[in-house]
Length: 489
Image 1: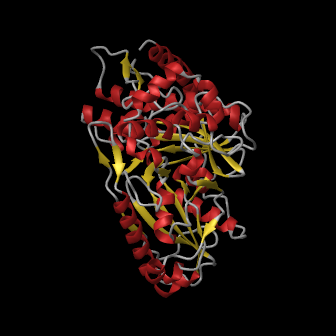
Image 2: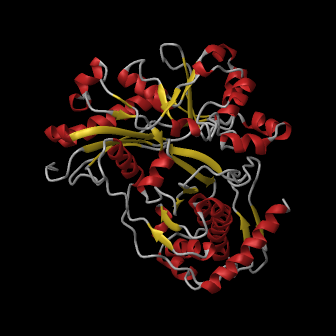
Image 3: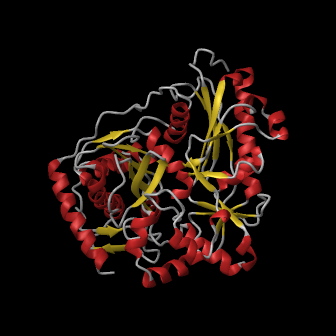
């Protein structure tokens, strides 16, 4: 390739997702280099009937190494323009290690539900609103308190182990034992960090009988490691002396890359699941109970909520009815009034995250009759998710301010029906983000800022999707129906 005309310094971004790992070089404006071939690899998620959802640490490392190898091979001699490495990973993640940093367990991810029983017990016996306002997270199986309680009950021998996010473990493989810090972003996602003091929460340390020394030192993103181990310096000479910034969580990077990097902008991700996040101008004095507060870095809190529902519900409805997504379906839905078929769906097919965080919640369909059609079911799936997003949006307005710029990204935006449903349910203009890889872009922008550069923060946005006032009124009625139906089950 030849990216000689791309402004330097370049940033190599490593995006460690739960389904794939990508390594891409970006220029000093955060743009993917022309002709750049991304390094791609994957570490398989191992899901069990017992609720386990884990990765092999060795396989994650192998996949990261392979992705970086491929990216550097694509760059060739031009890899000398790389001025930093920036990393994000899925959140949250948890691996137990010994004093030398060797992994003692698999990597538990957010989808591991084996701590559900303990989380549910705590919800009945603890003052959850107080804990939530202090740590920014709910009592739920996806966070470290429940996962640690499960691990320590199942494997008492881990009582003296250390517990790290996957990003910390990877940095120790590349830089040796000195690299045992974790970003504030990664640790805010655990549920063990006080959201205001940015220190470990002593209440949870006491409950779990943990010492601070068993956890990584929380540090800001801009704290970088330099000086790869001899093995990796030989393997990647272009990266041996450049700063590697502490890994942050992918949702924070996506928010920055997608345009919601400052107060006044709110980002919505529409994928298999959905999320809504905002960077407020200060820590909320009291955190709304249905939301979480994580961090981008020390100066940027990140408030929002994630939904289990999204494109997965739509795919389920299409499979069930035999209706294929595409032009015919789009035409059938184009002029349809929300709730026209009489159906209302509570789309909690995989439990609930925001705002209720109820693992045991399940979906409900109301209004079924002999006249119900397959199109009615598919439409109710889209409308049901849109209604849930609107309810979350109403909660978010207390943090974002009354008139945030709403930016949406994700695969569902390719559908006119989904675009229309989102704008009409929220009742505000929605700007589609045209950046194809907002997460990698966000990592590059943060790294460039830490290097002292002035990156181009604003993403490419499409024309706004304007709501139809009449359809918004229809959605208000449908949202009320959904809330009433949900309260009955």
